[in-house]
Structures are given as structure tokens and as C-alpha cells.
Image 1 (cartoon, rainbow, N blue to C red):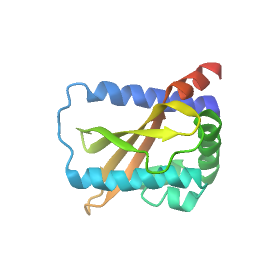
Image 2: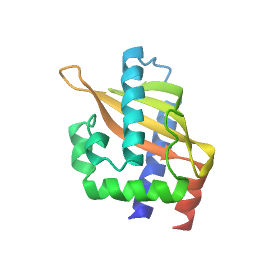
Image 3: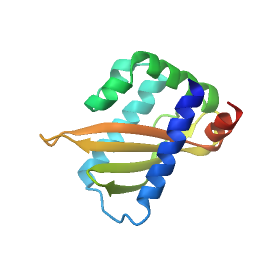
Image 4: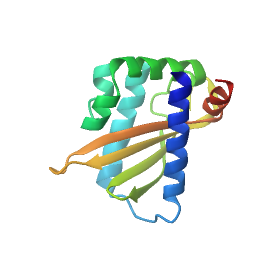
Length: 150
């Protein structure tokens, strides 16, 4: 299961990186503000193993995919590989628009990862104009190393 998560995270990160090339679309400050808060909540909720808080800003598709079992597996994988998120260490790096989704990229500190962890938040907007998290991805040297071991 850990290898599947790593492969999924890696492939998604590559796709997002490739998609970003040539995309100079500016992301609205309101979306970045939402994502700042929502991603911080995701990171802190993982540290605290708080499934209810973790999924509060997720869209319907994420709610279907991120079961409590998946959440526990993700928590364990991240904690074993890179430790815990260092609260409020998240720093905005970049953002772009890809079709009808918004991608916001951060660097964040983790207790067992000497390098910054790249955390990518993907946001969609409902027909009612409500922002929701459609995905979060993590990338760091230790996570890639763990993937290669599995």
C-alpha cells in the first residue's frame, strides 16, 4: 500500500510539474488565502491524527477516496519517512491555474527531513463558488528515497 501511495504521489507531482510549464495564469489572492488555511489544517490534522478536521475542506471526490484507513496509512507513511510537520513552517512558493483547478505550492518543515518538503494543494471551485481541496501531494528527498526502497 505504501508503494502505491508513493507511486501515485510521484506520478501526480510529475504531471503537475509538466502541466505548470507554460502556465503563467495568476491565481487570485482569495484562493491562495483559502489554500493557506486549508493546507495548514491538513498538515496539522495529520500530525494530530484528526481525520474529521483533515477532511473538512475536501471536495466530494476526495471524500470518497480519503477513507479513515487511507488517512491512517498516509499519516504512518509520512511520520515514518519525514517525521511530523513543524507547525506554521509552511511557506508559499508558487501557484498557477490548470484548466478549472488552482495549484498552490508550498515548502514546509518536517522534524525528520533536513530538506524542505514540497506540499502541493489543488483547489477546485463548486458551482456555488465554494473553494474545496481536490488534492494534496508531498515530495521530498526522503520520500523519494523511501519510494525507491519499497
